[in-house]
Image (cartoon, rainbow, N blue to C red; front, side, top):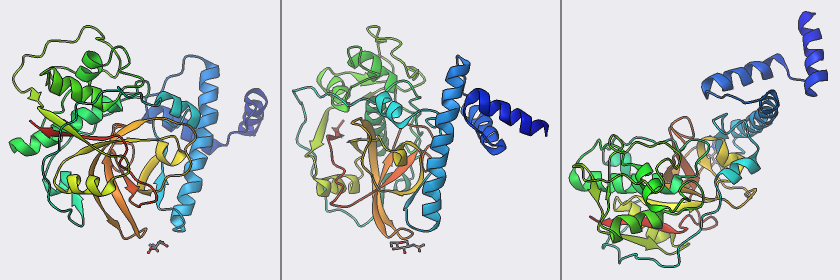
Length: 332
Ligand SMILES: *[C@@H]1O[C@H](CO)[C@@H](O)[C@H](O)[C@H]1NC(C)=O
């Protein structure tokens, strides 16, 4: 009875009739993702969007249970904001007019299935760019250089290379907004810069040192000689380079519920809510017998609680070409 009265009060005060399950889910979400809200209004709005997003996930997972959807969703760090807000956090990237891309190294024909990380026995840390800095361009650039360098130097457990160094040193104040991997690759190849490991240049997920780029004369740093690109829509080339153990960075539009809350399976894009940019590192491709779909395997920088331990499998089909502003480290 007390509960009923309490809930009636909730309903009148908040305007929404949350069930005991709703309240428990939101409390767990706050604890799991270490959320804090500055005001009761912020909290109430977050609660509202959380319930909406959780219900989206439930609806999609019901479809997945009936095999009418090939991917699943779960509540994650983005579940307390609107999809349009998520899209705004990851604004559309702006490209420089000049490119210093070089001719890519020769590659062999593509294999049927590839997973660079598993096939090569690599242990690669999945990064978390947080929820306020759109820095996937820097994380993806650093990760692609890290993976290729690890393979070429025979080091299966490389330390993460610093995305922060790229954010601070290359981006003219736009490191958390509209930057692109090319700017990071230009910095590394055109100015003989070197990329530090995170223990000497930690990731802070903010533009902390803008204009105060730390000098990087430390052993263990990685120097890249050239980078190369793939034409938009040329998924055959993308496949060939990945098959030759080259991690390729692509630009993706993440503004759908299915991407925002992706948790597993093969993601098939729906119409994006807005134009936005998230950079992913393509590390493999294959066939998923559960859904009967071919997929690309990509490493994201939303931490390990997002997706399949930080990775997403995206449908691989001519209807949805993945090669977009594709770029990769070429020679060291
Ligand atoms: C799910 O549907 C797909 C496509 O219709 C099919 O290829 C696949 O075998 C189905 N999976 C299961 C587990 O029934």
